Image 1 (spheres, protein in one colour):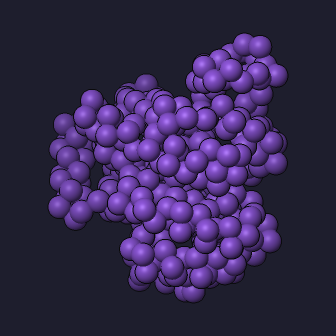
Image 2 (image 1 turned 90 degrees about the vertical axis):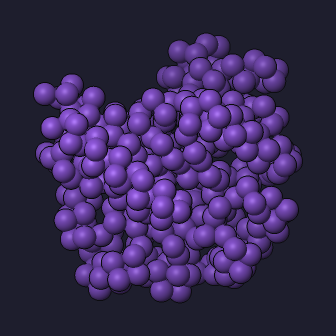
Image 3 (image 1 turned 45 degrees about the vertical axis):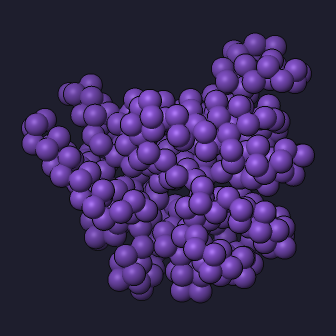
Length: 339
Ligand SMILES: [Zn+2]
């Protein structure tokens, strides 16, 4: 039964909307890029790198996450990272992805912005050609750095505006509320970018941060945001504005010791556009379909609810309404053919 469900979930057409490209660095690729770029790692084998991919909270995760990025140096490294991810996503039934990247994590260590974005861009073009999967880029600002640095990064990105669909906000939320970046997001909106941002799980001031994102910044989507379940007014506001949440069950279980499945399914049942995503799959050991399956097993989801989550992933995406409709019909046909 469980293997039937796994096969069903894997074949279910889906979009992925909460995915950090830098969080897709598998130990094998990290080791290979280090060798290619002549970078000495403390670990002497792929297995030793794997041993370091073990976490019990956000702090121990971030301690491995940022230093690992130094193996990414040239456009071809960023290409390989994104293409490897898109290949894995495609194998899990993902048909469209809107992917975060953190330019400051690279430019801050001397890698030029164009090297990052051109590498990612070439992987997107190749994956579209070879696999038929579509993908867009979302530029994330690191919220534990200054608003001025975020604004400078936004200005640096403007010549590449056509390659970047939206902007987001990630990294350590503590003491770094959405309001800190109000001017940056208003400028991004004026430049034509769509807006999303992380409101992480169980933060200090989670509800106030969600309120700021919805009412002051007026985001188009919310990343995580699961704590909204604690505030009926904000749930109704998100519903009336058509704001979707990008939830990440397996990631939640790493940073809070639980998937938050009751909250996610509760919000789905209340009619919010809830989606399921993988966040940093190389580090949390679960890609898109693995997250659907983990949630299904934890919460006892039925086929109809899984199909609704997959439909939500396209409804919440930034593809055209015509393409959304096409995917919704495809999901209906898939479900009909598998029940
Ligand atoms: Zn995230």
